[in-house]
Amino acid sequence: MAKKTPEATRPPRERAFLVGVEIYTDPGILSMDDSLTELALLADTAGLEVVGMVSQKIDRPNPKTFIGSGKVLEVKALAEETQAQVILFDNELSPTHQRELEEAFGDHVRVLDRTALILDIFAQHANTHEGFLQVELAQYEYRLPRLTRAWTHLARQTGGGGGRTGSSGGVGLRGPGETQLEVDRRDINRRISKLKADLEKVRQHRQQHRAQRRRSRIPIIALVGYTNAGKSTLLNRLARSDVYVADQLFATLDPTTRRVILPGGHTVLFSDTVGFIQKLPTNLIAAFRATLEEIADADLLLHVVDITHPNALQQWQAVQQTLEEIHASHIPAITVLNKLDRFPDPTLAREIAAGYPDALAVSALTGEGIREMITAVEEMLYEKFTPITVQLPFEEGRLLSLFHEMGHVEQQIHTRSGVILQGQLPGRLLAQFQSFLRPEKTIDGITDIPSGEEE
Image 1: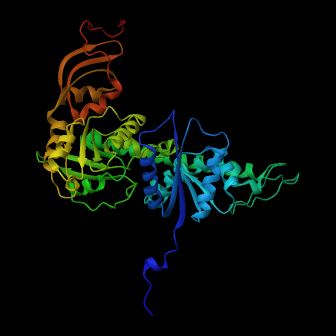
Image 2: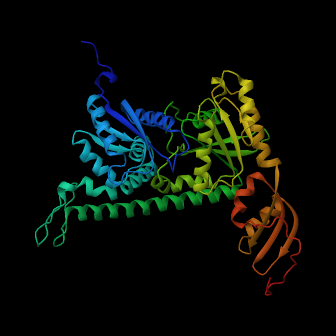
């Protein structure tokens, strides 16, 4: 008998039917068709088999079922026809919408939304203790308001003297008249608090490491971009490393940092980060705060874009929006238009690059354009000086010394609350002074104020 291959023993994938909804007042970055195509890729990454899709444009969501009642009947019929086991919505559903839709579609299918799908993919791809903590926190925060639906069969009153729980293997006493639902909600809230405390320890540990890196003055370059843009391949090219690379969404979840020596002899750290995506769940951004702070604390960003993607510009915009949400849009950035090797006309690719700010066209796979990119990185970090005016409190003596040592001080004013400096700094140091920027472009007219006097 022939030996079975792993594919032969693998259980069949669940069949998923996709539903896309475009709300006229909130159209989103991608068109509905393109967003559904992306949802299909996400479903495939999660291990689902897409068996069909349908879409609808509405003025506003239906209060009960999100989509219109007629569309509910259409989706139900199509799901039955395709034998779908999962009905997957491209929008985030409220707990009410999800409950009403499950009742409408029947017990034989599950209703999931885009957020639940992304959380499932993240759970599959987490490889470190921190990654597991972050995903678990996001999942619990997503599920908490949906407990009414999930535990309807347990939402019953217990006897006056309390009883034992039996929801998830745990045993404990319930108060008089307390429902199983309340017990489960309290248990989840307790778990959320524990996860947040554990992640805060991770965050503090990361801050200590970043402080050490600051003292060593090694610049940090964060690779950011839409998922599957080629960031891990680029890191492998730069550091000659073997970071996991796959042609799928969210192949890399946990951050990876590699040391690289630039042609001028300077040592820098390149950090690969989780890929962004449109409609990235808010609770996921919150749960991954410790990881995303690695981006916000970088000295330079390499914004990697898949130049071959038909929605490259929209993906670039989605990443820019997320950078603003995590307060990292102020960091100097170079746009890296990747996958030049797949572009039919390299000359046209470079013409397209001219439409992006500070953009270069490269191929992380073949190495084309990498030398020019490295040169631009070194110039941005060490040669390009940017005019800046900051007001430093007296306790920020380290930054004051750093400005004098590494920058060009053109004017310095002592005030009652600190020191105002006007001058120029190399790009690698700008992020450290972001919190102390003055809105004025000049400090002409401000006089030196001795200590103890009003400004």
